[in-house]
Amino acid sequence: MPPRPSDHTWPVTSGGDGARSGAATDQFVRLDARDGEQAPLDQAADQPDQRPTIGCVIPAYNEAETIGGVLDSLLMQTRLPDVIHVIINNTTDESVEVASHYAGPHERMTPSGKQQTVIYVHDIGKNPDKKVGALNYGYGLVESMDYLLGVDGDTTPEPDALEHLVDEISSDDRIGGISAIYSIDDSALDGWTAKFLIAGQRAQFSAFNMQNLLKGRNMAVLGGQFSIFSTTALREVLRTTHQRTPWVNDSEVEDSLLSLQIKSAGYLTKISARAYAHVGGMTTLRALDAQQVKWNYGAIDLMWPGQRGDTRGQPFHPNLRLRWFEHGSMVLNMLTRLGFMLLLAGSLSISAFVFSPWWLIPPAVAIWLNFRVARSMAFANRRDYVFGSTLVLAELYMWIRMGHFVRAWWKFFSSQQTDNWAAQAAAERGKGSSYLYPFLVLAVFLAAVAAVWLQLPIDLQSDVLSVGWPVLGVLTVLQTAWMALKALRRYRGYKA
Image (tube, rainbow, N blue to C red; front, side, top):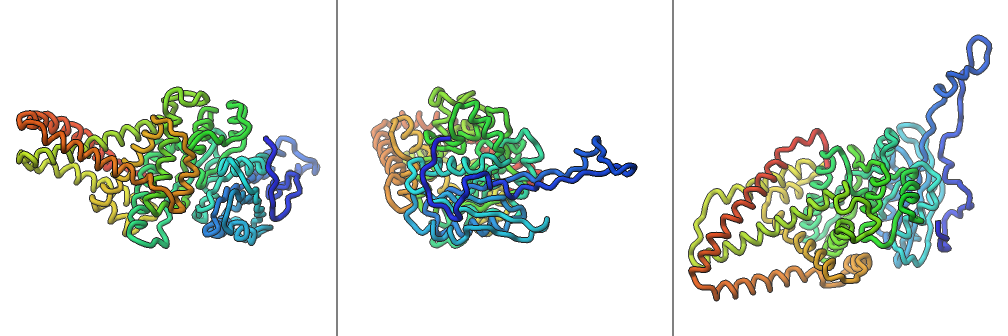
């Protein structure tokens, strides 16, 4: 481990391995009934299983409004972490003051008996590696424990979430990490824009989670919001990649890269079947754009052949195949929507449009699929059903996502050197106008196409329409069939 920066910690740590204080240490043996001596063959079988130790790491950057709720939810878990480290970095708000109220030992009665934990608050000050640096700092504090639980500073898990994660990961030594099922927190929302964007994000997360649940619960991304990692697997990653720390600062999606490395080291990456956690969503177009562009750009960085020399199996590593499929699906979405818009406008311009009832089937199937996505949510509410049943809202959100997709690929191919972490932080503070660029580009593109179209002779316009509509029809049939297959899937009791 590299040397850690000096920090301020409450309560003060001793520097030893006190993190394992929550582990069970008592040992029991059975005596032979005949002579009171220990029966060696039965000794190991009669000893109780040692409770695995869990170190929780919470990287916190300007989380004064949410860190209290996060710590409250962790202290209400049916299975408490053995130790909780809040790693506050680069903060300019009252995060330290709020978190320090929780510092110290805590004890509560749970269904399985009395449990204890200790909360440490570390203010590491200026941290150039941001969240990655905070996570690695926390790893250095808990690396001797059995599991590392990573929690974001705005994530509130359900009371039994950690218990389910521990039960699942400890049941199979092949598992290197398990992610909770994430739902976007939609409480205390102001304004129609925020409610619309959160409803779209909830549907997006639900569809993604269900896709992973139905594929053998294999998870390509162990999201940092609420995931548990085997420290044995993390040490194996360090050995095989020659890294000093599990998380690296040269990736926009540090959680995706680590998940890929855990898989390459021979471990499984899974999504839980029962652990749920509520994460903070983006309530403005500016903030959502910055987050999604960062995620998409990071995914492209992992996917693109030869882009990262340390990614084994690239570009078709098992954890990257789903990424390629998602990006291919987005390209198809863009082709069908833009194609329909242009062909419809062109047909109307020369009075050649003939309505066919067959064109009502794709939107009907889309509404059916969106409704099923809402039904699959573990915490669905009225807004989720309205979003899923109203084609206009889902379509508008899809156009917004297409803008993020285009911006990410443009940044990649133009080799723009941008700190996307800083861009997201600025966007969440209400700064930046990059989120408007896709809409401006679309407007310019449509204006240019219209200008060219009006200059074409009528015969050439007719020829373009006679070729374009059948091609669009084939693409739409294929896309509609795929949506129908997804809508017909059995969810096998899973709730996303």
